[in-house]
Amino acid sequence: YIEPESGNCYPILSGVAVFLSNSLSKNFLSKYEIKLNEAKARYPKLNLNQGEVEDWSFSYEWESHTQDEMDTTWGWTTEKRFNDSLVETEMGVTEIENKWILDAGCGNGQLTDSFARHRMTAIGIDYSSSVYTAEQKRKSSNLCFVRGDLQNLPFKKDAFDIVVSNGVIHHTPNTENTFYEIAKSVKELGRYYIWLYSRKGTFLWQIKRYFFDLLRILVCRLPAFLQVKAVELTVFLLFPFVKGIDKPSFKVAIFDSITPRWRHYHTPEEVAYWYHKAGFSTIRLTHWHNKYGFGVNAVKTKQTHLAGE
Image (tube, rainbow, N blue to C red):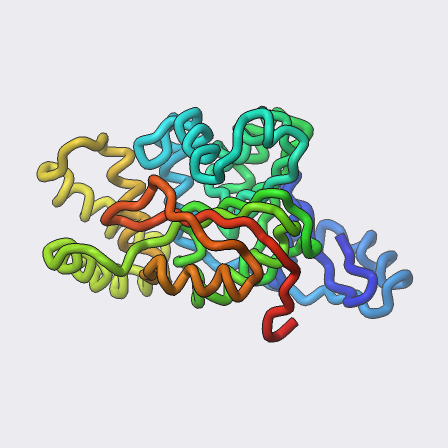
């Protein structure tokens, strides 16, 4: 795909459009050299800078999820996640039909697929390579997966009736900035739901969180294969003391805890200000509000021009 004005060129790999600036690999440029040379004649500004998408710890997390053939995510079935999403966004099954929905940080794509199966036009976007596996399993024609950066979405403003982002944007360099970027894609009177890690909690809970954050600061700087080994070692040491979760699910949880480069914590009060600044109604804390984090839903009531637009 070529943007006529900028000349930026993005590949489509395994059926997935990759909207990342460094996604033109040496192999891709070599394979399509003739076609790209022809394109240069039509687009003088054509940008063919070679690059490789950096390793992303969540790619390995979702790869582990696939290898273990897990039919649940964080212990929940896809059906439960879909039904809970309706509760979180305060929408009924009939209300969502024929709506456009963005799953911002779709991970394994199972939830995105469930939206499509309920007569929605669903788009799942993720930075990780999990979108390729999700595309391989895709059966709905009204479902599309995209590899891209939530900090720089490849979509038009006001494109979606509903946007959901479950436990994702707090893993970007700046949660607030990413929130605003995604908010632009929500239509007026559209709904925007996010779930974030909570800064609050008991003293013992915060001690536990600090321990894993310290471990994460060390592990996230390791090469990818050593990160995987660190996760396996942590699972081996801690799983005997864990109750109420199976080993594959615990492994995914450890990936989520000790490998991300960024992991921010927030409060409902500060998030309420973000929604207000972006032109949304008063937020509603949802039932996914516990010691781990909190869910927030709101409706976009007006168009707002944020700083930097």
